[in-house]
Length: 442
Image (cartoon, rainbow, N blue to C red; front, side, top):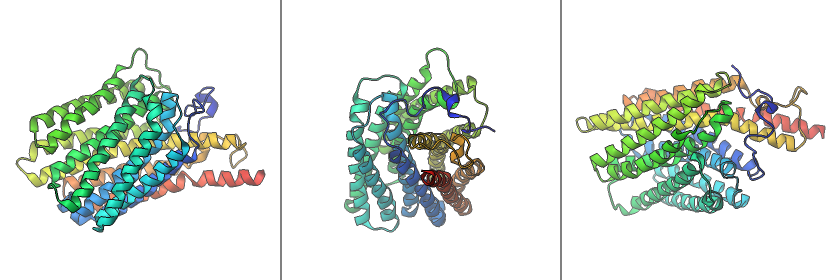
């Protein structure tokens, strides 16, 4: 199967991810991406270690810690890297400051690890420090993106990213309340409250960012031109945040009708996203490759999440434990949707970013002395192994929660950790070799 080994000139006269001089230095997104790989390792280890508690109660501190490593240190870290790279591309306006980008990375890195470690080891001071750092990171991000996203702009990617940043801020505010509640005990952090928070983070922040950016990336990476007006993308980025505005309060205050209304609207938005994907697949000129496999499998995970969430809502009144476990499995599947898509895109994005960096440094040959291609920047066999391991990890963790099986959770956690380790090595080994070789030649 072909992948990103195609020559750069086949993608047009300009680099797709470097449409203007507005994008930040490669070190900015790459720092977020590499940190996300480490976060995946931590999430996998935490899930494997907490398998017994997770199988019994998905709201236990150990499980919540593992989930936060997945949502904060892995998914949010990676999505933040994508935001810093693609916001200037879709808006044609630069970030306010590269220094703000680096400060955001450092603040979020501290928050993404302090919060789960503090929760897991019951270190309230560490949890509070993590909450403070998260608030700082969110403020820095908004300040940095304000001029780009606040300027006049239209289209699904721009509109969706505006809503997504708002969703990120709302998720953070909800989380800060959690942090202070751990000391004040203002309210009971029961399952429906946790789901209300998770629904914002998964759909209005992580999922919406992916849906928005995908509207720009699908045409490039599938080499697809969809004729006519692509309305499905705009429907997706509008319906998803609207649905969350109903679903989250409905879950929080146990307003069943409101929650169902919100869920149906989110479902409509997700269907619009899948319709957009189907349109690009129909008109693609690139043959099925590893990227195709990642994106298609991500969609399967999304559909599984919808089915599990529906089953949870229907059964929780009659069997509370089963309903909660199915809800945890649904969250895992929805997280798997974003993670699978993110990792698939990473195998395209990082080579583009690195290729641009190497060319700017005068490095035009690969290690064999031939013209440097995007596909020369990582090992394709390892990438295929990553796809298999990641897909198996998501399935195993989801089954583990749905069936209350510690064994499946242990396997899922181990596979997540192994996937993160392979990603970290595969996305850095060849570039480092090439950089050393290029430096030696000069």
